[in-house]
Image (cartoon, rainbow, N blue to C red; front, side):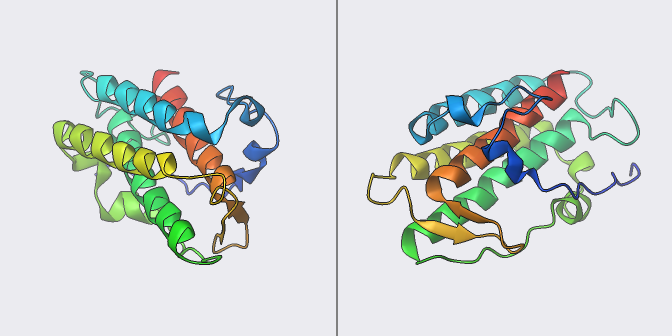
Length: 174
């Protein structure tokens, strides 16, 4: 098993206010209505990445392999699916903490089968895209709070989610 990656402790919510210099994501250029299609596009990008010969190779010891990033993105889709569902069905839910680094280790991302990850990632992206597609003008402003206190509407959660996966497509292509 490769050495664990140093945990990412940054608060990435700033990407809702300004363009990300690393990946180019601009929240002002996005709408929630576009999120389902863009989640599909990023899932297809990861599908291609998962077929690469170097899918298990870390570009540096402290950087996830394309496979590990794909596992993370699959799980991001699952977590955001849970959060959107909570926001649509409960008033101002608080989301349980999710430790992405602990999940990577416990789930042994580096040992997973790329073909299975591909199917699971596409299914998870499709599921959460479908949830975003059900959002109406009446529900777009429903709120939820992350365990660290960051508050989201369904719209801002969708854009935050989109940045995460767009950024990781950039990570595996860079």
